[in-house]
Structure formats: C-alpha cells, structure tokens
Image 1 (cartoon, chains in turn yellow, orange):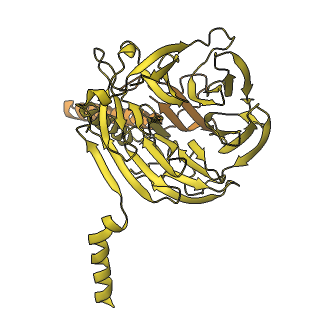
Image 2 (spheres, rainbow over the protein chains, first blue to last red):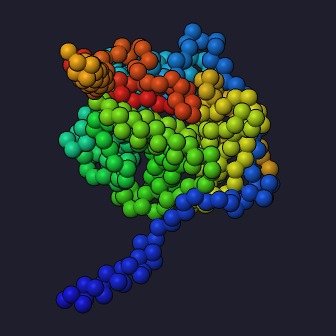
Image 3 (cartoon, rainbow over the protein chains, first blue to last red):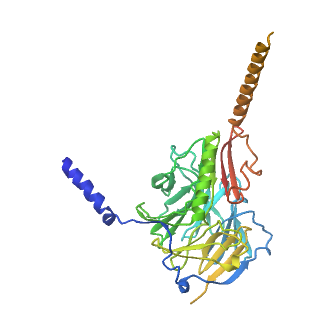
Length: 354
Length: 72
C-alpha cells in the first residue's frame, strides 16, 4: 500500500505539469515583440472628455465603465455613480451618500451585468446594492464574510452570468473568494502568502478582478507585485505571470522595509498600506492585457506593458501625448481606451488602424 | 553627606527620570490613535514613499482608530 502511494506521488510530481497545465511566467525580462515596432499599439484620435459643461465636479474617479452608449463614473468620495451620454452630457446619478436601502457608503467598485443591472459594492457595510440601469434601487445583498477574516472589507468584484460574486478584499488572507447569489461564502479561489498582523502594519491586498475570454476565466491582478493570476470559474489556476522591472523591484523592497519598521515599533492599530505600483489592467478588443507602470522618472514617459491573454510579455511602449501627465488608470470603452490621469482628467484614445 | 553618596543619589535620580521618560513615551506610543474625522487626512503619511496619498479610510470603534487604509 505504502509503495503504491509513493509511486502515485512520484507519478503526480513528475507528470503534474502535463496533467494540470499551469503556465508560470514570472519576472519576464524581454518582450517577445519588443523589437517588432510594427506590432506595437499606436493611439490616435486622442480627445479629452469634457465634463466641465455639467455642474458636476469629481472628487476622485474611482472607476469608469461604458455600457450601451452611456458612461458610468463612480466617485467614491461623493458616494455616487454619475451617468453621462457619449458627448459627456450629464444624464442622472445612481445612489446617494447614506446607509439606507440604495444608499452608498464607501462604494469601491461597481459592475454592470448583461441584463442591465448595476451592482455597487458598499465596502464598509460589506454589502452589494443593486440598481436598474436607470438608477432605480431594486435590492441589496449582504456578503456573509467568514468570521475568521473579520478585517476583510471588500475592495472589488465581478458578477458571473449565474449571479455568483467573485470578491477581492482590501486586506485579508484571501485574494479572491466566491459568494453565492444570496451572499453566502462558497469558497476561496486564491490565497495570500504574506502574513497579516492584527494589530500591525500590512501591505494591502492591492487586488483587481475582471473577466477574460467571454466570462469563462477570471483575472486577478496585484497592483503592488504586478502578478497576474488567471483562473477558471471553479478556481483552477491556469497561469501566473509578471514582468521584471528593476525600479519596481526596488520600490517593493523599500515599501516592505517601511512596513517591517512600523511593525518593529508595534503600532496598536491595524494599518493597511495600499501602494499602487501599476495601474489597473484592461483587456483590449484584441484580447491583449494593458497596464501602466506608475513609477516613472520625471524625464521619462510612462511604460505601458502589454501581455497576451496567455501571459506572454509582448512589449512595452509609451504614449508620447502623456509626457507631462501621469496616467493612473486605463479602461476599455467599446473600441476605444479611456485613460484617467492623476488630475482626474479622462481621455479617449482609439487604436490606430493598420 | 559624603560626595560619594551625593553622586550616588544623583545617579539614582537620573535613572528614575530616564525610566519615567521611557515609560511615558511608550505608554503614549502604544495608545491607539484617537479617531480622526474622515474628512481629515486620516493620519496617513502624505505623501507616501512613492506617491501622493490618493484615498484613505478610517474605521473607528470606541473613539479610536480600529483600522485605517492609506492608498498611495
């Protein structure tokens, strides 16, 4: 019996990569298309979206989404989603600050489903508020977060076609968990390796989650470490990948050192230090993944890293238009890209046709 | 009183002062931060090591900061 078990273990160890294919491509140094300039993305029709004609000013643009010719802009500090038409004319808003049904308190993320429901993540209350596309409140779901992760406040989420919630946290032992349509915890899909100190100083989970491949796969992106993880909806890890950047590695090391120093001083509070070293990631119409590195020197343009959906580092490029502006987030809006700068300006860019 | 005993007393006094200062420092250092108004800077360092403070959240309980998040 023992022999059989040993043989089985040895077999699994040897053939594990064949039986459970998983692509692990961390710290890729050379883009496979870096020297093929003709395959690099070129942006055209760069236009600033002018919201100034409306009597609305943003305090902080938290997330953007383009859905059915309407632009949805979440402002976390104002606890509202502002809705605009294609010409950036204000139409209406969704939610309002407060704690009652349909009110928003620290909304961190929203998701628009294919059946035109707007789900908004109320982080502090660990709750999801649901609205129609026109902004009418239709219901709320409390996320029953397991008691062993009491500090875990949701940070981001996506909703599958069958109504399951894939949730990330500001800080917690799990990077990505799945909850039933009723809000019950189902299972954890991705765990955090770094230890959490309560009380103490911690680096936040820095998670972003989005669907890939027509919603059949999930991408988790860690803005701090720059590591992408691709999973199927059942939680099988398909690929992990990242790019090597010396400035990024040094920054991580300094931030980790600062956190360790704070823990040496024994803080009585639980601190979450969330350092975004990369922008969010978005998938272009070509299936490729785009993310900006956020630590550029003053005399150089930001690097835009491009990966294939399989996790190959293709190339990095820059957008000369943004030489004097820092892009902090990137979204896909139909066939265009939407860039948000650190001054909360929004630009629409089209991919130049070949 | 001899010079030696005077010196001894002085050293003892200095030690006591040192001990008290250390005790006072640590008792204050280990006290949780009093709760900040969310409209304030929430006690986050601004800017951080690699960028400005973008967002902050404080969760308060019993008048003290239970946890705080500083996004850079």
